[in-house]
View 1 (cartoon, rainbow, N blue to C red):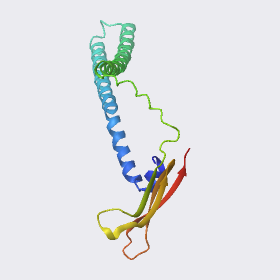
View 2 (tube, rainbow, N blue to C red):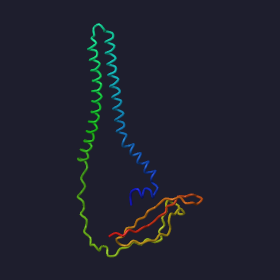
View 3 (tube, rainbow, N blue to C red):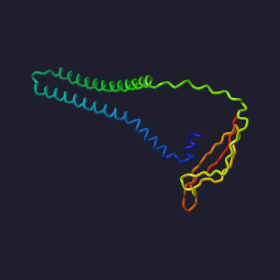
View 4 (cartoon, helix red, strand yellow):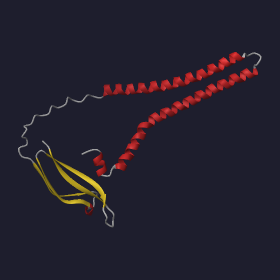
Length: 194
């Protein structure tokens, strides 16, 4: 038994959701940190280019008789293109570095991990095997916790013959007693297999 039915039967929804959120945060933190560093480098580059533009405009204003307006316009457009080129360089460099890191991890995995042995060929059993087979369960008590009075079910008895599977499903319910303690209702079912 696995999957959603088991999670709901044992009341693990909140714990599983919390665990999933923690794993998601853990897996996304490197991507988030890389993105933050990339934004910080872009900010620094933008400030450097803005400083260059301010210096250019200051030189143009102070040296008005020695500068040409057309050349100043071309210089400002060149500085803006330089800024965009630097931003693209940082963006593509981080993408390349991330991809190279992934390739390096795959290469290490392929080189370092030893391959598992060949799968074992299953033994061919006689179709009538086992000739006799039976499991008898009698006077079984199921509880949760360590206190015996919090028993979910008492005196369970069942038997499992050959080619039968036994499935046990627990459902957590709250009783209407004064103590409002949690209990499990267990149900057993046999599935005939061939």
